Image (spheres, rainbow, N blue to C red):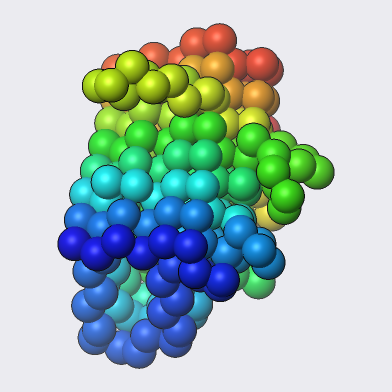
Length: 231
C-alpha cells in the first residue's frame, strides 16, 4: 500500500465517479492530512452507480476533519451502488470517523456495509474539531437502501502494543440525522460500542424505515447517554 500523510488538503480526493466504476482503497496508511485547513483523510464526492471498497487500511487517523467523508452515494432502481468499509483503523480524526452526507440525501439506492473496523477517539478536539461532539459513524438521510454496521469496535480500544484509544466524543452510531430515512433496511449487529460521549446507537427518525434490526451480539456499555435510542 501507500503512505499518504502530511498533505495540505485531503489525503485522497475522488470527485464525481460515474456509472459502472469500481474504486478500491486498500492497505494504505492515511494520516495527518489536512491539518492546516481542516480537510479529511479520504473525501469522495458524488459517487453514482459505482462500487467503492475501503479495506484493510492500517491507519486512517489524525486527519484535520473526517477520517472518511462521502458527499453523496447513490445508485438507481435495480442497480444499487455498493460501498464496503471494512477492516480499517479509523482513529483520532478531529471530526467524525465515517461521515455519509450529501445535501440532504447521503445514501440512495445503495448497499452499504461498515464492518470489522476500529473507530475510536474521533472528534476529540484539536484545531478544527473542538467546537462540538463528533460520532464514530454518521449518516444523515438513507433512502431505498440496505445499511449494515457489523463487527466493529466503536469506542474505547487498546491495540496489540498497549496503546489506548478513547471513545468518540459524540454517539457511537448516529443514523437518520437529518430527520428522516425511508424504504431502507438498517442492521446493526456484533459491534462493541463503548465509552462514547453521547448515545451508543442513535436512530433519529425511524417511522418510514422498512426494517430495523439491532442485534444479535452487540455489546453496548459505558456510553454517556442511553445505549440505544430510537426516535
